[in-house]
Image (cartoon, rainbow, N blue to C red):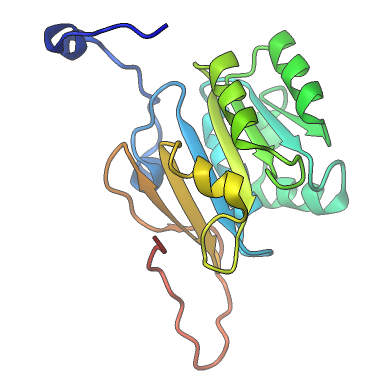
Length: 209
């Protein structure tokens, strides 16, 4: 049941934020405990690499559970781990090898992960209701969801289109550039990797609404 909060009480609250490095504060803002983030883009645009880099940063503050429901235990995921260089994150980042939604919930109830990453929403068939379930069960854990991109440049499917309105940070990755809109403040484009543009092509950095 909800409760009423007065202005004085609200303003007296201290909300905890993570002491991110300057490059990440520029990219996603000074995130608070229990933040929610949706990342999307077309195939091979840098979504997984971007989120893996973010996971490396977040591992400084707590354990990261990365559910690789799409790639699983594979060479492609291994290549990303090498590219991002997670050698210093042993014991801090743990991968789920294609955990189902129910298996993921049970693991999260048992372990002490501070951050949850789902890669991807479509492979696990994440619904709007399941997203709300995650929020209710783990209100203090940071949650990052990777989504495919639809033809409109927005997250693919009705569930993820709805979820984008519920998260604190929504981020589109295109041609090696991540551009976020954050409730935590102004952001700047984040270079995931150097893409090789086609001759005569202009790389578009504008965020699609």
